[in-house]
Image (cartoon, rainbow, N blue to C red; front, side, top):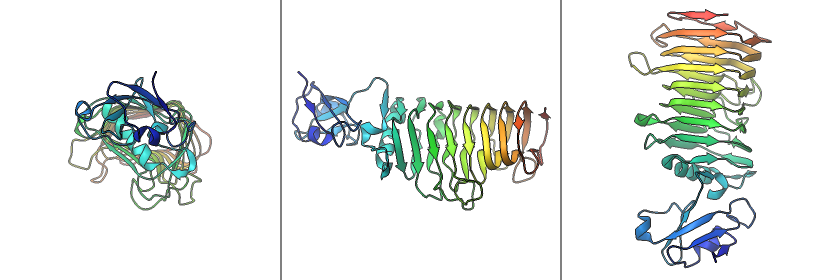
Length: 330
């Protein structure tokens, strides 16, 4: 019969033989949501260094290897989710574990307070982040709170499940990524969908630059989400600098709601094949700002803006300054 431990610490203090299956009732305390199942391996068979967040070294040197059904959650790595505890380290280790191996990362229930989380892809394995039931709450940062860079591998990334990204404490200083919640760079097939709420406090309060910054990504779909309270932009999309071949292209932004924002959407530098349709804009300064054509924002082309609802716009709803080629607004 498999032995059951109350906590991760109790498991790590045990000496178990290779081949055994065991489980825990919780991570720090029994019933805290961090209970998991482990397979015991020798250190030789394990063949690496356990991170001591997901996989754990036992008292006899063997390793308890986290078992899963294709997904892992924050709490399996020690996140508390009470809105007060700093869960940065646990979330970072969960991100590394899941994204490196192609597992689905689930937030799980709770409010997870965190500092800077950063991930750079090491392969083209698909990345899936399911925020169902979770609220991410960033610390008072003046940099990007959660950065994912596909690097040269350009993996597919899906961000879904509803949930909340609360950036009400982020600081809006100079710079595109200042106080931004998520930055996605160098991703192919980026999908952000499922009713995720990206909250930046209240427009003009100096808290929160942008909900999402998307850089040099291809085949992007941002669908059915909510953006509110960001001082600069709900979504900021950008290609590479002038003179490079890096583009942000084949982007569809559909059926989102934007309210209490400066610029709801901004397209900058090299971008093409943009579709903006079925969105609702309320109490925004600009609905869409598309810059492209001078030496700093070169070039932008092919944008189709149609069937959007503009309830209240303080300036030009669709500001296509310096736009190079085809733009359709209907």
